[in-house]
Each structure stands twice: as structure tokens, then as C-alpha cells.
Amino acid sequence: MSTLPSLIDAFGRPVRDLRISITDRCNFRCVYCMPKTVFGRDYPFLPRAELLSFEEITRITRRFAARGVRKIRLTGGEPLLRHGMEELVEMLAAIPDLEVTLTTNGSLLERKAALLRSAGLARVTVSLDALDDATFKRMNDADYPVAKVLAGIEAAAHAGLRPVKVNCVVKRGMNDDQIVPLARHFRHTGHILRFIEYMDVGSSNGWKLDEVVPSAEVLRRIGEHFPIEPIDPNYPGEVAQRWRYLDGAGEIGVISSVTRAFCDSCTRIRLSTEGQLYTCLFASSGHDLRVLLRSGADDAALDAAIESIWQQRTDRYSQLRMAATPNLKKIEMSYIGG
Ligand code: SAM
Ligand code: SF4
Ligand code: SF4
Picture 1 (tube, rainbow, N blue to C red):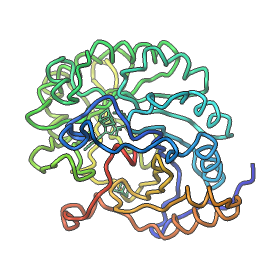
Picture 2 (picture 1 turned 90 degrees about the horizontal axis):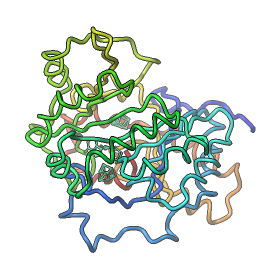
Picture 3 (picture 1 turned 135 degrees about the horizontal axis):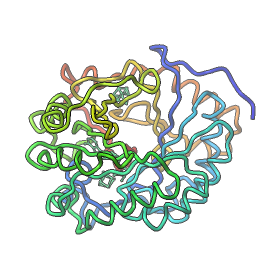
């Protein structure tokens, strides 16, 4: 594969991670992401022809891999709902020097884990916001037992997708009473539980700052039951801050997107289901790569487009959040991919 010079944005940040939303549909209706009031029965999800094909996704990924991208995260919507997505995993995993990972709500993971592993998936992150069925249902507005998600996590670990990361978005008054039970449950399992601050992504979740539970509070609450200490990041610019239990029961993490923005080291770019490229989770508009692909652009034209988009990037929304932009129209997480 040809390798072109690394791409650097206007603030000196390289492009390293490509997050690809492979469907805008989901079988859950999490209150912080796709609330039923907005994403109801008549919501106009994208028709099939609008979606990038697996070949189109693979072609774009190759161009990014040539410019320094080393990690792909498949997301959505719920990525396991996209028919035959393990074929896409196989196509992407065949690109040299690229790690293919997945974020899922875990509902279909139990039956897919082994297939995904043999297709070349490297790791998986499973979202799980509660251990208690009633709270889980309040968070995702779908009647789905926690036990099935836990079975998906075990199946993934068993298939070799270790360590499994488990992400919990904490919303005050909704699931913050689940912090300690989740911590207790995942101690000694080898899975890495991470707590994410509830973010103001999109416009449909009615975000309010007082519903954010700061990571410092999450750590304090866990520390009252199980003493913890901070540990070094795995690599510079790692998004999660890592902590470990003093008694050797394992590791946890916190992702403090609201209280401790990490834009300075942000190397992520996002490709939407229909081929719009977004240089920030909070971008209000994207760049249409699908129109380029479908008008017969060659690799050089694709490279030039990607180069110009990344080189002009000045995004640092989380750092600016408190200062301005509250009224900007933002793209929904389920469309752009988390
Ligand atoms: N459906 C999959 C899932 O839930 O894992 C993948 C897509 S989901 C959009 C990706 C991640 O974004 C999930 O871990 C979810 O909890 C997180 N997320 C969605 N909306 C969020 C918000 N407003 N604040 C923080 N995290 C959010
Ligand atoms: Fe679906 Fe994931 Fe959004 Fe929940 S967070 S509604 S599971 S896409
Ligand atoms: Fe990256 Fe934008 Fe998030 Fe900052 S706000 S960390 S630039 S995606």
C-alpha cells in the first residue's frame, strides 16, 4: 500500500482514528442519544441506497490508512444491526497496520462474538448503563434484559476479544445509583469498566449541565467502597483516565468529556452512514465523500479532499463548550457515530 506523508491539522494534531457509523438505526432508544419522542415510529431513517456500501467504506478507509490512521471503530446506531457487517470487518481487517474495533449495545453480541473475532475484529466496547433491569429500561427505553448484555460481554471475552471495555454513560437522577453496583460487578472479571460524562451531543436529548455527573464524583463514590489509585495512560493522549483497585481487582476508567476536555490531543475523524466526513463529534456540518466516490473520483482526488479537510481542521468544541455555541445545530450521535 502506498504511504503518503502524515496528515496534520491546523493545531498540529495528526489523524489516527477513524470512527465509522455503519447504520443510523438502533433497537434501543437511549434517553441521552435517540429519545423516543424524536426517534419514534415515523422517524425518517436513511434508505439503503443512501448508505455507503462495504466497498465504499473500505476504499475510504484505505485512503485514511495511507495517511496515518491506525484504528477503526465501527459504530452507529447499533452496528450489529447492519446486515452482514462481519464481512465488512473482514475487508477492513485485511488492510495492513490497522486495528478494527467495535462499539455495540451488546444486544446481538452473544451470537455474533465468535464470528466477529474470526473475521478479524481486534476488540469490542459494550455500552451498559445499569445492572438493574428497571434502570436499564429507563435509560434505553427498550425492553431488554441486562443478563443478555452480560452474556454478550462474556461471549466476547471467551472469543478472545479481550479485554472487553464496558462503557456507562452516567445521567444524574437516572442511573447514578448504578455506579457502585457496576463497579462491584466488574471487579475481578478482567473487563474494563469506564464511566462517561453525559455530553451535549446532538439537539434531541435536552442536555442540561446539572445532569452531568463529573468523573471526580464517580471516582469518589467508587473509592468510598473500593480504594483506587490513578495509573499511567497506555499512550499519550488516551481519552480515558485510568485507575486501578488497590486490592488488585482490576482497572476502571473515566472519560471526562465535559469537565476535562481533551481536544488538544484529539486525533479522531468520523464518517457518517451516508458518507459525510466530520472532523468533530460536535461539528454542525460534514464533507460529502459519497458524492466524490459516486462521481468516479480516483484515489488522488479522494486523497486531495481528505488532505484539505484535515489540514483545515480547527475543532476544539469541548474546550469552548462553556464559553459559546449553545445554539448551534449539532449532529445527532446516532448518525455520526459515538
Ligand atoms: N449503539 C452502540 C452503543 O450504544 O454502544 C454504538 C453507538 S453509541 C452512539 C456509541 C457510544 O456513545 C455509546 O457508548 C453511548 O453510550 C455513547 N453516547 C451516546 N450519546 C451520548 C451522550 N449524549 N453522552 C455521552 N455518551 C453518549
Ligand atoms: Fe442506540 Fe447506542 Fe444510541 Fe443507545 S447509545 S440509542 S444503543 S446508538
Ligand atoms: Fe475531538 Fe471535537 Fe471531542 Fe474536542 S470536542 S475531543 S475536537 S471530537
